[in-house]
Length: 219
Ligand code: SF4
Image (cartoon, rainbow, N blue to C red):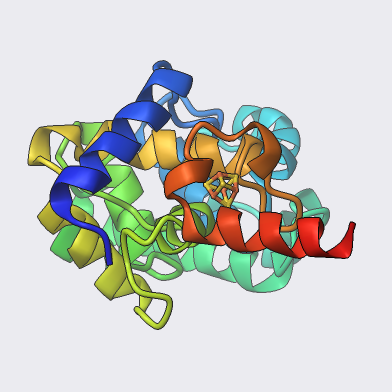
C-alpha cells in the first residue's frame, strides 16, 4: 500500500484532471437524489437519468409513489436493472418517510441506512451531496481505482477501502475526492480498457505498469 503522501500526490493529479467533478445523477432535492441513488445500484447514472427525467415529473412526493400499484411503478422504471426489487424498495422507503420522518429524507447516516434499499454507499452519497456532510462513498469506480493505484489493498472489502481512504485523505476533501475518483474511473481508468498509455499516473501505477509490460512483451 502506498503512503499517505503518495496518495495525496496522486489525488492531486486526478483533481487537476477533473476539478469540476460532481454528482451526475439528475435531482432537484434530497428525496429525488435518494431515489436516484437507490436506482443506480448495478446500473449506470446515464440509464438512471433517462428514467428519472419523466419519473420525477410523475412522482414528486412520497405520497405520489404510494398512490399507484407497485406494478405501475415497476413499469415506469422497467429499463433499470433489478426494477422489481427497486420499485418495492421505493414504495417501502416512501412509507417509512411518511410514517417516521414527516415525509422528508433524514439527514443522519444512521437513519438513512435503516431505509429499504439504502446501504452504506447510498447513505454516504446522500449525506455528502444533499447535505454537504463530509463522507467518502465507495462505489465500483472508487474501489477499482483505489486498488489499482495501490492506495488500498486488492483484498480489502468496500468498508476497508472507505476506511483507508478516509484515513489518508483530509476530511475537507472527502466529498470532492469521491466525485473525482468516480470521474477518473468512469472516463479514464475504465474497468476493461483503462487509458494507461495516456495516463499521468502510469509511472507510479502498479496496475498500469503490469498492463504495459503485457502489451510490450506481446509485441
Ligand atoms: Fe488506471 Fe492505467 Fe492510469 Fe493505472 S496507469 S491509473 S490502471 S489508467
